[in-house]
Image (cartoon, rainbow, N blue to C red; front, side, top):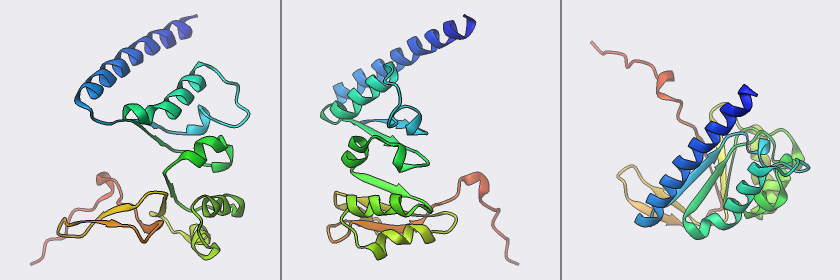
Length: 171
């Protein structure tokens, strides 16, 4: 009983926060992002459709018309609802062993096998990003360029600041 009361209070506070942010964003015509870690916990094939699932599905389908974007994280693409995966504009991947999942990425972005199979050989802190839209890239001087000739990039993830080392002092 105590747990349920806590969940109800949390739900009420989250609704207030979300509605306040959404109202502010819509007035300023700015984009708001909803970020879901372990997306499959909310939106998974075969999962019972509870209130969180229904709300998430509605926001996912209709949010873009109201400047609401989504970023989701999951350990397995196979568990995601195909509609969600197929409507994603970008997919970022770290090492992926399963050939079926790599092929799914390749099929979604019309990539040759030699490109999507690179996902299997990614090392620690390496990733690949795939897009249905042109990439916007910046050079080291901050000049912007729209790269219309690419559907993917491979790169390194910058570690969090707490993993950085103190610079060595030269003498």
